[in-house]
Length: 73
Image 1 (cartoon, one colour):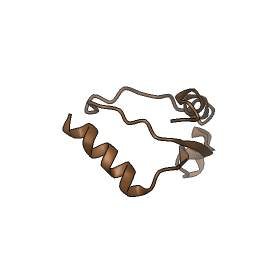
Image 2 (cartoon, rainbow, N blue to C red):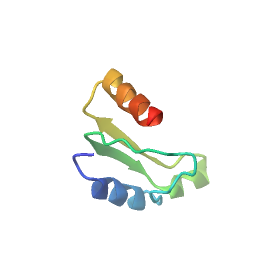
Image 3 (tube, rainbow, N blue to C red):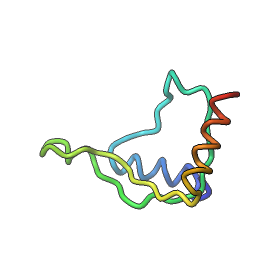
């Protein structure tokens, strides 16, 4: 992400998450955007769901194309 993956990592840490390696992920895609909301893991105690909301600058079709290209490689 243009806002840097450090910004995303910091937001995930604030929400109680960390970037994790996913065994099934064989590629990565860089997208420009920003973190717009973080929901900490403490919300799960009351039935909520922790997570991070991102605002991506690219159109959905562009994002889909980049992901598809990464999956083909």
